[in-house]
Length: 109
Image (cartoon, rainbow, N blue to C red; front, side, top):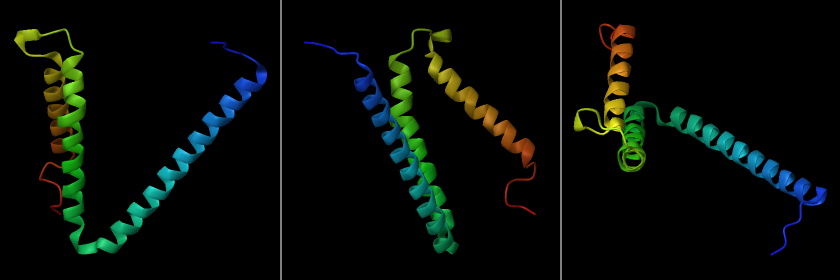
C-alpha cells in the first residue's frame, strides 16, 4: 500500500471537504426554509408540531445520547452513573431558568 502526500492529492481532498461542507450548509438552509414555510402553513395546529419535535428530541436523548454516555462513564458517585447526575442537573438548571423567566407560566399574559 503506497500513500502519496503530494500537493495535488491534498488540494483535491480540501476541495472535496469544502464541497461537502457547502452541500451540508445548503441542505441546512433548505430544511430551515421548508420548516419556516410549514410553520406558516400549519397555523392552528402548531402545538402538535411542537409536541412532535419535543418527542423526537427526547427520543434522541433517551435512545441514543444517554446510552452512549452510560457506556463511556467510569465515575459513579453514590453508586449512580455520573451521566445520570449531569442529566438531572441539566434538567433542574433549565427548570429554574424557565421558571425565573416566566414566573407565572409561559403563555399567560
